Length: 196
Image (cartoon, rainbow, N blue to C red; front, top):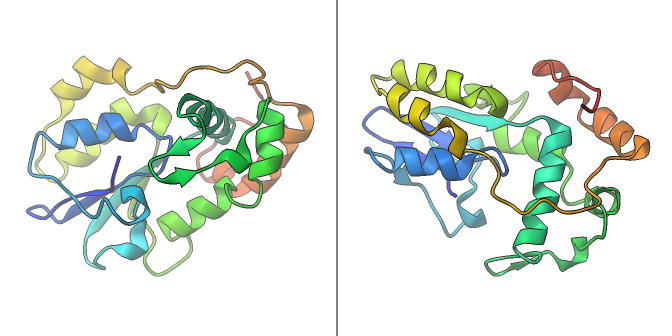
């Protein structure tokens, strides 16, 4: 689902993949929110593709869960997403997928670019996906938008609908890679470095 903007309130939702975008987009479509550009990057536009004076927000997910979700998503869509073909990432285990995705799908690199981390245009608010049902309505209420009721009624609908694959456990090697490559995310969002 795409990045969306509410021009009346000068606020934009940056949809970072695998962080509840279907749920948020479905919710925002009820009001005066518009898709920014669906043709560029499948609508996943980062902070640098938007006007400088718009307030931006988005979500990040625990790195272990993000990789699992991405792996399950690719299997669910047979490693194709629209015209994009991800067959080069086809894997029989999560560990194999992480090895293959190190160059093109390194979470930390994507996160830094997408949200403009440590740039003069860094995203205004990056919230934890795991706290979406609490933090999203609070943030939107600052702009006079009331989504408390919608989110409380639908908070169980923002879970990943991808089919869980077998072999979706992380090895110590993959865990260490994710912790080391995503150390900034673990620290900033106080994510646990132990698999539960």
